[in-house]
Image (tube, rainbow, N blue to C red; front, side):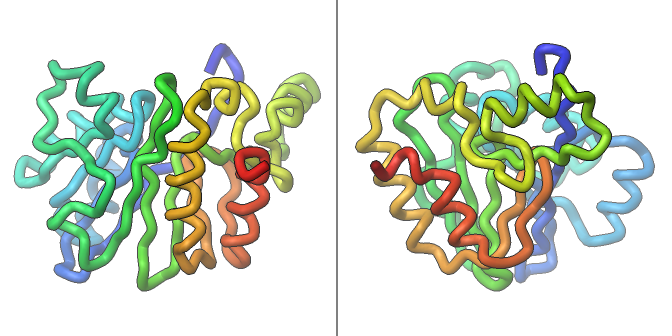
Amino acid sequence: MLTIPFTTRMTIVRLSSGALWLHSPITATPARLEAVRALGPIRQIVAPNKFHHLFVREWARAAPDARCWAEPALAKRKPELGFDGILGDAAEPEWNGDLDQVIFGGTQVLPEAVFFHRSSRTAIFTDLIQNHDPTGETPVYRWLKAINRILAPNGESPRDWRLTVRDRSTARAALERILAWDIERVLLSHGICIERDGHAFVERAFAWLRK
């Protein structure tokens, strides 16, 4: 982003049906397609915000039986992508036996669909929390990410995104729903994931919003 290196993670959930649910897909290389297909049939492909849609169609072409879903602002911004469904503020019937979800609004710039996998107690975030690995970063990039509050082990909500949250009551309502989840792990699209005490990590990341 703006020449700053950002590693990106795709998350895969095997639903109780055995089908796969793909979140924020990355490039569909032959090796990745082979590895993912070995896990099960791809049936749901999710683009959780306006930035994480670039490779949805690659996966859809490789998995023609899958349905592609978009966060509402993305569906409005990119109608030409022809999404099969628009994510709502509650889990879709296709996965409501396994996942909860909420649209984290309050910002016109980057609203996001946030998910919770109940059986593994795992929250799934895209851009609203980042925790970039400082290993291998140049001093300048480490400094920039630390200033933006997204450098591990102290990753939080990015400072630049916080400035876009104008409707704090809507954002707080989404946060309270997230904090009602029994979170142990936190999976992030950008940076080091949290394997335990995830609820405390999310509380700290959004402490600015609860003031």
